[in-house]
Image 1 (tube, one colour):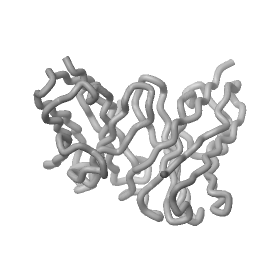
Image 2 (cartoon, rainbow over the protein chains, first blue to last red):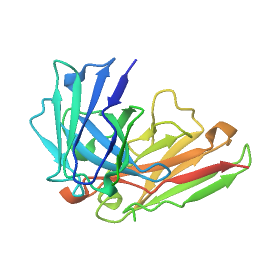
Image 3 (spheres, each protein chain N blue to C red):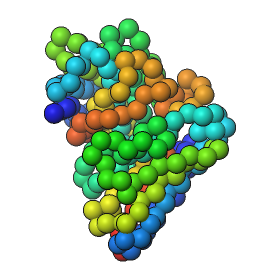
Length: 123
Length: 112
């Protein structure tokens, strides 16, 4: 059974930093790209970031580019999202999401989702 | 404001058929990019329903179906059931790196 378990969400002041983690199990982790997608509770979904199967390529939404960094450790089956210079508009539930391909962003879709970890940015 | 436009809500009685539209443009759906659909039950994470325009994910009942034409796609639910009350999101891709992955704004399906 595929499981994705996020952690690291917390309350933080504007300008602060957080690192989210996602531990995967139940599938061959190093065969698939992984993503982060966020959702303001009660609102829509926003794709945030993507990392290919071996970590050699990453891509970000314009809204987080230059502030967020995605990475992965295939030995530990974990992906990370380092979030710096946080803003109020980054407040959301962050989902770790499994892709279905090794590394083609514009053909990938999301077949398994974690339960999310909540980030709140407020002074 | 989402690049892919969905109606905020649709409703139907049990057993009826409802459809949810997802309208894009020539730079996303109209460019031939695949459309995928997700269901989000209250308090739960999204779940993949339909991929590649019209393919049901394993375990998804056949009362869910997807289609695409031109710059729009649709999700149909036939034989609506109480358990189908949820939010539904479409997803596709843009033609520029700035619009790599696109989601619709979501549609709330209410079973009357």
